[in-house]
Length: 323
Picture (tube, rainbow, N blue to C red):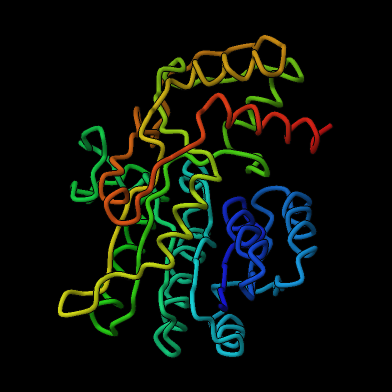
């Protein structure tokens, strides 16, 4: 089974590519542009782990370069595509929206075009809980109105869903989008809460908690995410006459306050945090919570890793990697 994983040097992409390569039943090609949005050293360390597997190969390529990516895709001819490559970060999208247009819009268009020319059995791509914006009711359901995202990052992910629907409708591509909810775990991004908070606690520097730490997040351990991604990958949407396109939430379905998250890290790290309580941040959602009924019905998805266990595994990795 030949699987292309975009964003393979990224957090979720690394874990998906690793799980596939570990099976020894897949030929896995990872692609990534290894950009400098966050530590290139961390991305290279992930790739070094992946390159230990004989069934994994890596090509550095920018998805926004249509000719380069199209050439890699046409040569490999994947049977399955897991598209996780994107410009990440909600807050950074307010500072540099052009980067999100290039990576998330132009890059995804090039993925869709490559798939149109040489159709895989299934394309699974990363959407985000950020598509749920103003007026969204908790728990977030896939049929809720997502026309009012409150971050530019969320707007690009909503655009991806519309683009994918069009390609499924016009070209018969089998496509599934997954709306990820606050993924955490070992090898996580340094711009995300677990690493930011853990570094601050370890170094005794202040942690700024927006909305005074009362925001609630549906923290989902990366192993549960990978389980869901790979099960979905093997079960494409139904054939026409309906467009072969689906959207699923994938989350833990048990949101907790960010303040409690910090307190759990304090206990695991054995040190108290220095807190700086701040008002709500523009573009931030007060609460995220995934309704996972559709995914449960489709593939029997059920998160297994508790927040306590997931954070224990994360802190174990954090201490090992950052020493």
